Amino acid sequence: MAALRRRRTALKVAGAALASSVVFFAITNFGEWLGPLYPHTLAGLRADFIAAVPFFRNTALSDLVYALAFFGIFESATHLARPRAGRLSSAPHRTT
Image (cartoon, rainbow, N blue to C red; front, side, top):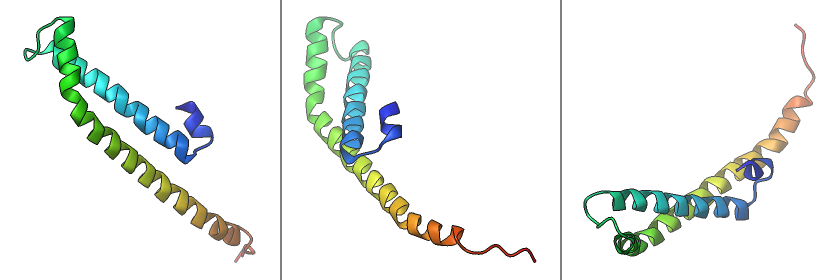
């Protein structure tokens, strides 16, 4: 995530969003496997992950869409604020 702080690009934001989806998928499905629904065997773990694959598509897609939307909004606001900030800082300062 440190690389994302230095220089934000749409590709890095999309990669971070997809990576967070994969981590969420792995952790939550492993936790579900520890519950009572699946047997605590490799076959049960496999069945748990296979059953969750259809839900992963929607999770990854929504994470990607929202991350890119927020990235676009932030970059647009930053771009619009730059010229205005330059005009404001060059104004003469009044002392009285």
